Figure 1 (cartoon, rainbow over the protein chains, first blue to last red):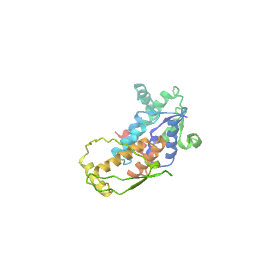
Figure 2: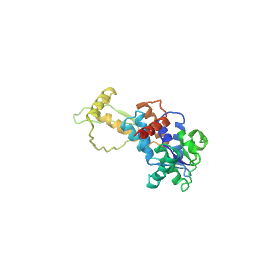
Figure 3: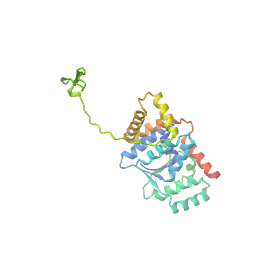
Figure 4: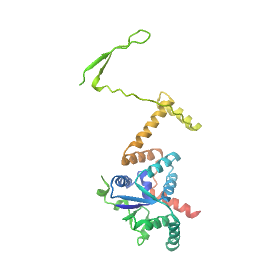
Length: 148
Length: 115
């Protein structure tokens, strides 16, 4: 599979909750299988850091988690002027959060070139944007595809 | 089962150390070179280290630090999935929480909107 990883699924890596074990298996598949690909915006690192801080994690653990996140075969896409400009249009058109707009714009900017199958997300807001982005939840990823 | 051998050592003072029996096939001699590394800690960290050294029965603060470094290095050497599982466990032990990831991210978005 070739996926864009939205922050709500990345935070799952550091929490014990429904589908968090599947998320770990999925990152394992990304690391080990050549045909798998994953990317996200570099901005996601900030969103993950903020979510972990809100969750009460101490600074040292947040830093360790972020270092861990960067060690995997996940590409971090820069927030370019073009992406930011497209995000502005998405906010004005769909009335979505700035961060959500940034992810949709980033996804759209690389979807064709990187042959992405979907955006993996646990955020219900993205469902409204079904025409722009193909959203997949972790429970919709067949478990036999992620287990090695 | 390997054959046993006996050895006797004498010290400079002249007294004998008792015989030691070892199985040669199981005897592993490792030459370990050590280096000293100094590290600066905050006062709070040094106090915590003092307390943990006492509470966990480390023979010294150096031994506590050595154990912590080895534990960390072992964690980093695990394969990708195992390392993530261990880290998830550490996160749960250090700061358990019932909030869902999606809710935490959503809260962050609301904060940005309020700014």
